[in-house]
Length: 505
Ligand code: G6P
Image (tube, rainbow, N blue to C red; front, side, top):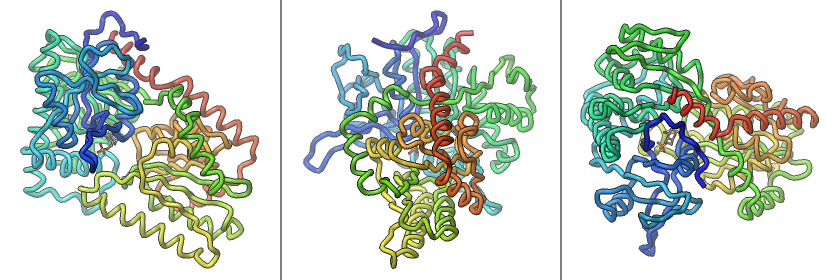
């Protein structure tokens, strides 16, 4: 039974667009086709939702040759895939609940590299997360070329795929675009499909107009105009929505209304909105009680979190915005301040290597490894390894660690939302304390129940970790209960329904 009720007056089908696909097909060494779920917060959130919609299709990037091969086996139509824990292609008349038709878009590799490896990550990602220092970025011929011969044509290709899906459905649809990879899609879809209702959700922070001045007008104005092709541009926080409107006002000279959060463009009204994304609490809790997770909890309790020994946890992609190196520096400092904790606390870091084709990311992964080696080496003589670094993507292990940890550290420089914080508070069983950066979207909902950290201040983060580890049990329990309550009340279904209700209006 599909659980999401679409308001009557909304057009159908729902056409979703994201860069990352909810499934990745590969060939294993023995030549067999494998399928696993896509990674990252956005896909995790949308996957469960998409399976609950009556009439949906999902346009996404082919992530490799095997995705292309699967798509080629379904000429002229999307691939029906059951998006279960173990995804698989099913027959087109399957009536299984979890089936979502996927349209894989394949663009030439060099074009994709310019779109993804030069413009989207790092340029847009770094601007929007405030990661550039005084001397960056350098915009030369390579970047201009990457924009005009990468970002633009790739956006056109995805816009055309979306428009074809809308046209195939008779020209009217609810188009839901996602993220910074696709700022130019809405404008083009609107031209081809004027009857479609188009919204775009931006899962990363939107900075103020001055940050966008890192880009020349030829790029920033094009990106903003592209986005204004939407009917609604949505963010996780009110701050981002307001800064988006301020950018339209200052950089394009448009009339905006900060009370109604609207902007007038070409005789249309575009709305900026905010909806804090969340998680599927029921399905996460179900996973938390599965055998795979329970076995891993057992293992963690024997080796890391037991009796006297407390466990600090972080679960992240190895992204500079996650602030992993400073987080370890703060932990190292705390151990120096409190030598009595040596041997009594361990830091488990489950880190998923990410975007290694981007030089900044490759360098960051090396910096993480070097920092861990430095801190661990200090305690060699005690036969104590303070940091257990695992470069791994293992959802059952992450959920087991959420459940077994005493402190969860989320010290991101900036983060649109941060779903790790939300996931951990609903499954933890040790009255864990959340150490949470004030610059995460999640802080707006969970800040009252967390120890707040200021991401550049290593001294303060060291003190915050100590405070978290020594918080009285009663307070820990009450905070965790209240934090979980907030997430239960605003789960992923509420996030989505709020958007549908607004769109219907
Ligand atoms: C963030 C972004 C997503 C992205 C994900 C993983 O959550 O908002 O759009 O898919 O990171 O990044 P990747 O580049 O590996 O898809």
